[in-house]
Length: 223
Ligand SMILES: C[S@@+](CC[C@H](N)C(=O)[O-])C[C@H]1O[C@@H](n2cnc3c(N)ncnc32)[C@H](O)[C@@H]1O
Image 1 (cartoon, rainbow, N blue to C red):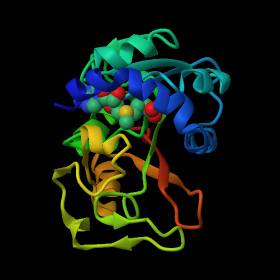
Image 2 (image 1 turned 135 degrees about the vertical axis):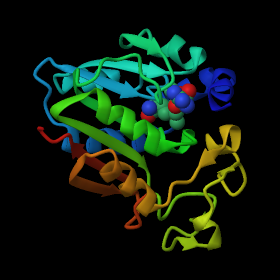
Image 3 (image 1 turned 45 degrees about the vertical axis):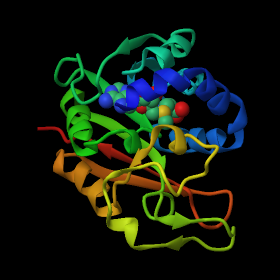
């Protein structure tokens, strides 16, 4: 199970997220800023919070973040940065319609059923509340995408595969260690509309003109 994999690599991930990939994480946080906006001291659930690497940023935006993750190893680091709860994000121990914001950052490829998690986020959101997703770009990042030449991304037929993969990734990165589930673009967007949320904004980002991150925000309609 993915959480056990993260238990084993939590100290490595702590260095990776806070240091090795600092530029990448800065771009991730830029997307969070654009799509989540200011929080005026309201609660924000950060699903798959990992080591809590975005906790300080969420607080700086004015939110009161609470991290949720399944990995005790990851939460050992996160607990020094924000309040945390150990739980499966597909079954949140949170009341219906009780939080104004939910984020999921770099988490969707760790989850075998992301639509179920988006539905759970929608359940706990207050009407008018927002869900912000930041993830690897589903069209250009995956075992199916050869990005070895910065000028092009070559996508092969494995784009349609939804199984967990370990191969085809950077051998020194996260995915060679814990694997990843691929969620094709239409599945990702259908997960949001299927949960009854309204998509309201999108961002792409990359260190080259070919993006490696896709982020969006979606709002829970008022009844
Ligand atoms: C790639 S890390 C992302 C961590 C953090 N959001 C970041 O941006 O660095 C994915 C995280 O998802 C967590 N995770 C995987 N499956 C989960 C589940 N079902 N419920 C809660 N957390 C889960 C893992 O333990 C891991 O910490």
